[in-house]
Each structure stands twice: as C-alpha cells, then as structure tokens.
Image (cartoon, rainbow, N blue to C red):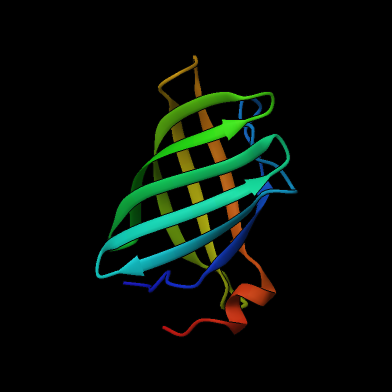
Length: 119
C-alpha cells in the first residue's frame, strides 16, 4: 500500500461536469488506512474529503464550498497508480450527491509533493 501522507496533487484531467480544474491543489494526510484531504482552487473555495485506503483503492466522501457560496458533496472511488517517473496518480470516479451526474477526474502528484514525503 502506498503512503499518501504529505502528498500534494494537481488536477491534470477534469470531467465535463466536474468543478475541480488546473488551479485546484489537493493535500493529503494519512494515518493508517484513514485519509484526510483538503483542496482549493478555481471555483472551489475550500474542499474536504474523508476516506480510507484499501490496497490500490481510495474511497472517500467530499464536501466543498464553491463560489458563490454554494455547498456541494459526493462520493468517490479512486484507483491509486504509480507513474513511470515515480509520482502517484489518482484516477477519481465521482458521483455527485447534491447535483446530478458522475464523472472521472485525474490527479497527479506535483514535483513539490514528491519531495516532501516518503513511502
């Protein structure tokens, strides 16, 4: 199991109905199998996710404050992959709970994120 603690990620691919984008930054904290994430950028003023890692899978619920003052939430299951350059990639399959739809986003570990953590 990869350790996601201290990881910083950016969005490299966004679903058509997603709201995260190139400006979005995600920072993860992991204790055992539990994961907490905080993110912001673009139309997301502040977002939080809470979940758990099981092997190469991360499942979580998220809540985010978007501009202009709208709260939205959903759930996701991510495939955790190791890229050829050693960085981590999350392929997120999300389902909105507060709006219609689902989709896939891709998050890649930033070069800065890889220098601050260890497996």
